[in-house]
Image (tube, rainbow, N blue to C red; front, side, top):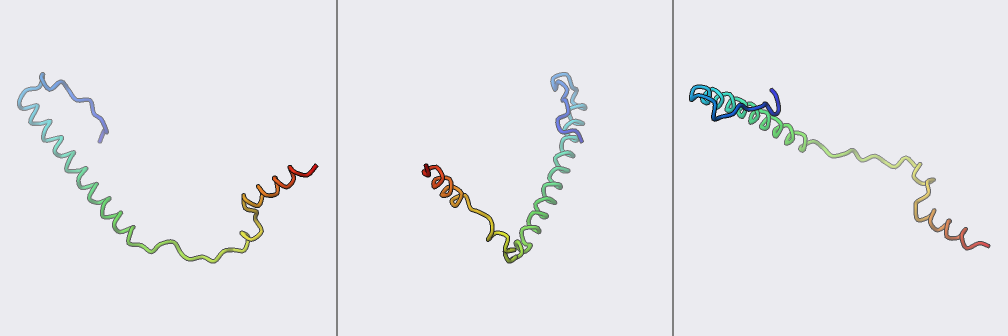
Length: 81
């Protein structure tokens, strides 16, 4: 199903061709509505799942410097003459 099909000039189409175009477009709309409904159901199903698991910190975080500690160290070094 093309995303943006090139539409013919509607003024040049006969009544039968216009009816055919409308039927085709209604079919496309019905397909898209079904897809939206399915995706809406999937989103609702996924939102009902449990959140992230509670994991204990690994201990590696204790050894890392924070940005404030680094800033303090830089300030101290810049005042040393």
